[in-house]
Length: 257
Ligand SMILES: Nc1ncnc2c1ncn2[C@@H]1O[C@H](COP(=O)(O)OP(=O)(O)OP(=O)(O)O)[C@@H](O)[C@H]1O
View (cartoon, rainbow, N blue to C red):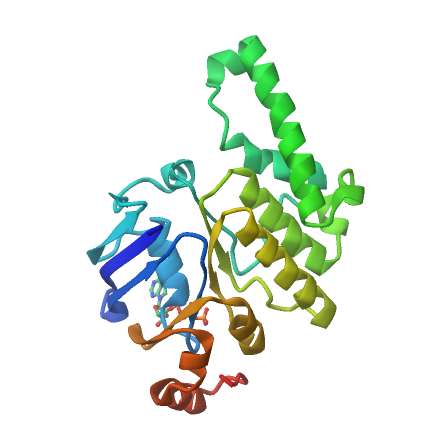
C-alpha cells in the first residue's frame, strides 16, 4: 500500500472541510478523488502534502506516519503534486523548469555546490539526462529551449507533470490536470498519465471531467460536504445511488455517467 489516510478531519474555524475520511491507495493505481465543488478534495491534497496539518487523523505513506513532516520533506519522501492553477517558472526555459524539479532529488549540499565537486558535476549530468528523458515522455523534447510561458496551455500542463516527475516521486498528486483542456489535449493527457503509471508511479488525481475520470481511474473515492460518500471502481461509482443524487443535487455542469 502506498498511501493510507486514517480518519482525517480538517476544520477551518467553524467549517469542517473534511470529516473522518479514510481511504487507501495501492501501489501502481490511478486513483480518482471526485466530488462537487467545496467537497474537500483540495483540502485533502493539502493535508497529504502537509501544507497544513489535519485536525485529527493519520497519514501513512509506505507504512510511515508522515503527519507533521515539513512540505519539502514530503517531496524527499517521494510525494509530489501539481496545482489547480499552473505554477511554472514562466520566464525560464522548458528544460530549466524540469531541472528545478530534478534539484529535489540531489544529494549535494551548499558546500559541494560551491566547490563543484566531481559528485556534483555527475549529479548535474544525470539531472540533465533525466530532464531530457522526461521531456521526451511528455512530448516536449523539441521545445526544451522555449520559454515556458510561450507554450500552449496543454503543453504547460504537461511540463508541470514533467517537473513533478523530475523529483522522482513514488506518488504523484494531480489537481484537476484536465481543467481547461480541449479534447485533443485531454486525450494526450490521458495517454501521459497511463505512461506515468507504467513507469511505476502511483497517481492520485482530483478531476471534474467525469468521462476522463471514469476511463482513466482504477478506483475512485467520492467526497461530498467533507465526508466520504462512496468508494469503488468507476462502474460501481457510476451506479451508486448516493453519488448520482449528490451530483444531481449539485449546481455543477457535470454528470457522473
Ligand atoms: N484555507 C482555508 N481556510 C478556510 N476555509 C477553507 C480553506 N481551504 C478550504 N476551505 C473550505 O473548506 C471546504 C472545502 O474546500 P476545498 O477547496 O477542499 O473543496 P474542493 O472539493 O477542492 O472544491 P473545488 O472542486 O471547488 O476545488 C470549503 O468550504 C472551503 O471554503
